[in-house]
Image 1 (cartoon, rainbow, N blue to C red):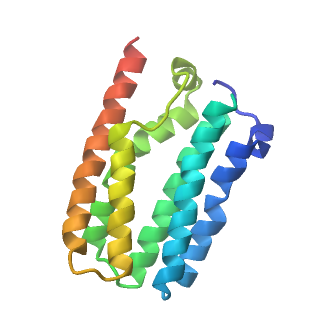
Image 2 (image 1 turned 180 degrees about the vertical axis):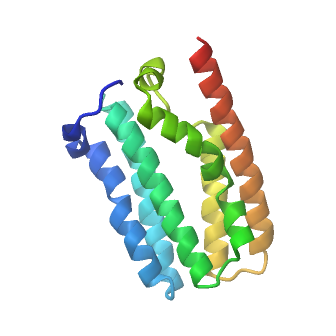
Length: 180
């Protein structure tokens, strides 16, 4: 990892990450059709899983890819949350619960994007178990919101708890990496 290169965006992992941007733009347009909105969520989740897997298994991990993946993740989540709040599917407080992990990770993403030393310090910043669990909990919570399941509020609180644990785990990992 280390240097940013525009050509890395043309690698399969970069293209998969970038695919989340049109999906983010599409989500608000299909929100009135829960099944279609759910399909957009699933497609975004698939690209998120595949980009990291492909990069690691095909030796295509790059600094550019790591930052683009993080940015497109945040952009997709932001589009979903804004659409759900504007459409009154969720309140602002509920959106903050859903985005607990993203809020907690944002300073780390900015640090990685702006600091060459931070990129050099770590050879691989992949999701850990708390991060993957938080993603699953967010997905379940948003699905419950889309389909107006009666237990959606409990699921949002559960996603917030999982998001907080994930954010703390990433901060701890970053602290160990920086201290090494």
